[in-house]
Length: 74
Image 1 (cartoon, rainbow, N blue to C red):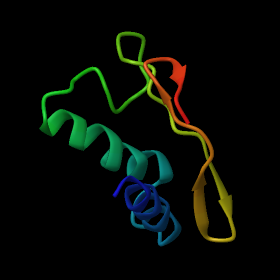
Image 2 (cartoon, rainbow, N blue to C red; image 1 turned 30 degrees about the vertical axis):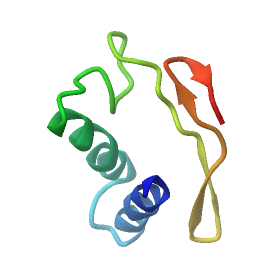
Image 3 (cartoon, helix red, strand yellow; image 1 turned 45 degrees about the vertical axis):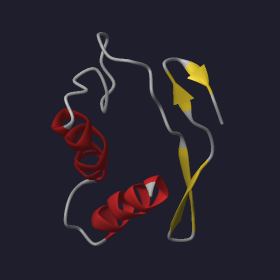
């Protein structure tokens, strides 16, 4: 469930287990690499422009938009 990955990253950062950028990389880049999608999971010039802007309300991260390949899809 994708929202649970976002929540897990923010929870890990909030508990001091990882910095937020490392926690986001863990739930984005690592799974992409595991399935051979080397052009996803990070922001870099040679990668797809998949972006998920998140805001935090209290302790709950809320996905506001989803951009896939540079196009807004949600």
